Image (tube, rainbow, N blue to C red; front, side):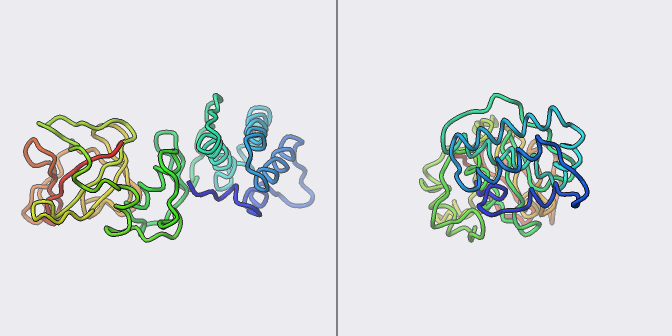
Length: 267
């Protein structure tokens, strides 16, 4: 997970909740501001728990102010999710209080209860999104050779970090027509397997066994380049003379461009 709201010196929350010198803020909101600044300076279990408790108290006791000021660019929600995920990933402490609802227009994506900030928009690479989600979920640590922000997410740089066992080291996603995936698995599609030169082509997160989520799904599923979910059981139709979708009952997928990819997963 790369932290935006909790980055030292970040003022996005304070800027978003400000309404001019003549407008007052509640004591609970002022307490949140103080707690957020403290957590930015020292991200300890204590400062993060204090911030989460104060955010919850503000939301439940001042719902109108929370919706109005905290809803600006989703800053209150994003601050909550960052603090909760950092607390879980770094200090292995869970928060029993339910997450607040993600406000309309909030940037970024929440997938399986894990929030991932905005990437590079419509040019975001699928491998980058999958890598960021895996980090945010606490499944792996950010690798210094592949930064979660500004990294180069291609078929050469990603496999050693996200798929260190290589194509042959991971099980097939589909066997005998039956999906083998569990929620939260990372799905990897490799081209060139038959030729003995596997090359990473696409990465996604399994939202369910058959519904996968990622970015830049145009080349593999024929949909847009933004972050989207894919129901792999649907009839994708014919593209350029190729019937896109699963081939037979195995773990091969036909892309719109006629390239066959082998689908494996890591857990």
